Amino acid sequence: QKEVEQNSGPLSVPEGAIASLNCTYSDRGSQSFFWYRQYSGKSPELIMFIYSNGDKEDGRFTAQLNKASQYVSLLIRDSQPSDSATYLCAVMPAAGNKLTFGGGTRVLVKP
Amino acid sequence: EAGVVQSPRYKIIEKKQPVAFWCNPISGHNTLYWYRQNLGQGPELLIRYENEEAVDDSQLPKDRFSAERLKGVDSTLKIQPAELGDSAVYLCASSLGTTGANVLTFGAGSRLTVL
Image 1 (tube, one colour):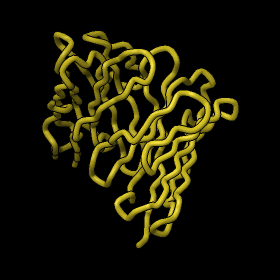
Image 2 (image 1 turned 180 degrees about the vertical axis):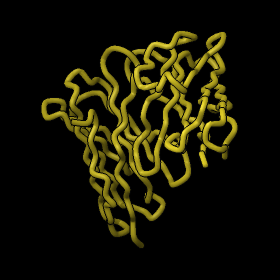
Image 3 (image 1 turned 90 degrees about the vertical axis):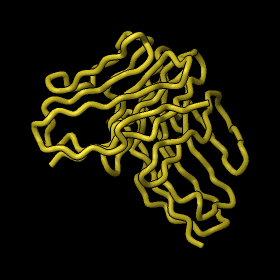
């Protein structure tokens, strides 16, 4: 079992719709959870992080964390073609600074 | 503020040749990471430094890969000899290394092609 798992996609959504991405993790001791966006040929850039159960909103992005079920999700509201990218989920334990990534979900927003 | 700087951006070499990548982290960032990213996959950690100490190198193929971080600032990652399977993007990242949400900032990456 991989430490961090994501559906590879592609997740195809029409412009203006909500894109929903999921991520599960195996280490119950995980403390911090990150979503990075990666455009083709570019390096990952941070969208947002979350470390408390519940929802965290930042503009059109909402991260949701459920530690009991060991999953974290990302919602992209009012999806735009510029949101087309690969979204990487990453997890960090309570002790130490090791950041483990999932394989990424490719999102395609169609005009 | 300058971000994480990596060089070279691209490198094409023949198999069995050596190659080295350089990374300059964000000023004041104590933690430095080297990741390898294969096409269509997420980044995989090769080595992590806390200041000048390598604290996690369990995924570094030590028979051919080596890394150093002199004076706890710049870092180099070396491959000798390179193999075809080493073709990937090598990403350097740095962070403050504090507890809580320890955010990593990535450099542009070094794309290696081994022929």
